[in-house]
Length: 449
Image (cartoon, rainbow, N blue to C red; front, top):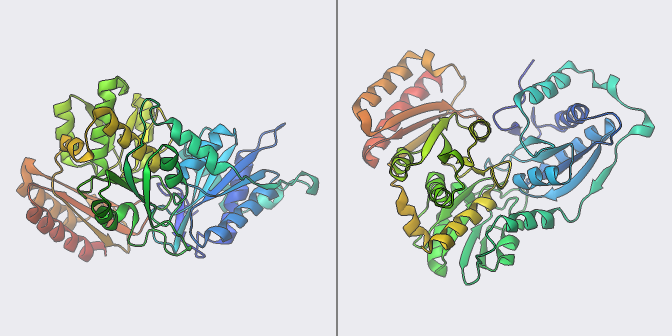
């Protein structure tokens, strides 16, 4: 049996296995069956980002869901965290998002949320996979009179905006604040500007005219350069860049300087500690966190714990340890007191709230953490052997670690969503990190590229 689910749902090139209409229909069928309960008409909410292939996959999912006697509620284009919120607030049995997040438009993916708004646990994903590969779902079909229906929900975006506005402190306002938003031609292109506008901000919006093929192209959280320039040109107070499905956020201060996700975590955790809302005085982060975050937390007297890369692992640890904030350097941050999953717009609002509460511009707040130079090289791979079993790679890693000593670190890991190996080096200078990173990447390419 093959494996469908990766670290963040099912993902691949649209119209190629596994992201085909046939597979989407089977995912819909298996998901519907897994969430059916006797004496109850189950319903599953479906949302998507702006990719062209979203139409194909949406209709296939609806066919599969309805064929199992479950109703499908279509909400159209909405950020991934919006589906998590709606699934929980509407007491739906599950929620499905059609998106490949920050990937290029030709990719797509399917993420599933449980009725409580949390991403599916591993055992539920395994049960769905097992049903699909058993290839016997035809035997489970209900009678023609018991088929499900499909509905379109018109006020989904408005409901989600109301939720977002309630996460911003009532004693503060965004009136008089100039904000630039980079919507990445993605799922936030309407929700983000409307939310900030309704909170009183003066809005300037970039990359908000999606055409199905331009999502994430030279914009968004991975390419904030245009946003930075626009902030300076507009003399804006702050700017935010989201990714294609709206669960990540990168901030840019009033000088045009780009802040990392780690810096945003440090800023918000510090405010939460002052307010007494940093439960257990603990922040959950990943192995990709910058060394500077550890140094900042030591100065602030904040405890932290590292997990594997992936927001699901961050969330699991947050729930287990009772932490109220956790996240990744990529800008995927979870505020568990507010939401069940990472939410880019919510993160932007929390950063704005920190600016208002502290009475300082973002450039001043950013000084809370010094970012150590970091280099990252992605190497395309044909195979994925355990890194620890490849002698050449382990030898060069040990060599670089010895040279860096306590002034840096090395992390070599496979991507959870793409066929590549990520080589990351942190050190005291840009020149050293780039040189060491290139050395390791060259060996990785030769060994498994």
